[in-house]
Image (cartoon, rainbow, N blue to C red; front, side, top):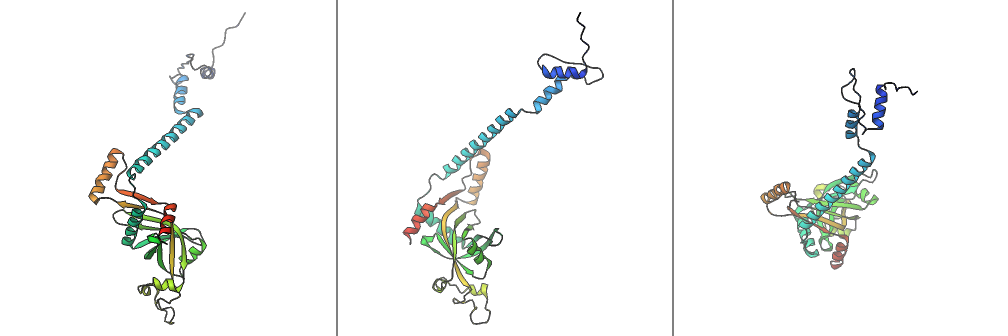
Length: 265
């Protein structure tokens, strides 16, 4: 004769519910919470996603990010689809640089590798305007920086938001004919006269050198319209989600730089 099963304990009910969640296994105990063990189990499954669902969510978010990035890229490129030819790009860049007069030159500190920038007054331009020349004190820190790493960036910025960034390599020229060619009496203000008849800030002062930056690439943005018009464009972009059409972003790549330099050697 088969014995009747004993009343299961609360824990056995829980185990049964976990094993067969769809069989309606519920337990009500007066001394415990009125909710059945299956209820918190369901709440738990709502909060904790399985590894497979997490992977699917991650793949979805990654796909969405890439898609949005491509959309924004297409929107931005659409604004610059009427990019001018090389001559116009270089001429506009030259005009902006000359109007700016001062640029921020970034070098890498020789002993630490950190980047440092300082304001530099433009002395001249070569190779049809793409190569930049600046006066320098050969005893300054930037000279040793360039001896260690010749890679530089020179950036220009205007109050209307226009900007330019020239990446290239730099060398320090101490040839007296080059120094004399680009010498400016204003250098005496920055170098001073040491009173030894040599270090007097004149064009033969051995402290004076020229930093020649040979451009590799150039990127710049020319602001369009008036300040009011740009403000309207920014508000429009915020409302519609479109990229604000406030400037023309242009790039002169390495191949174009080499082509231009060969034509203006």
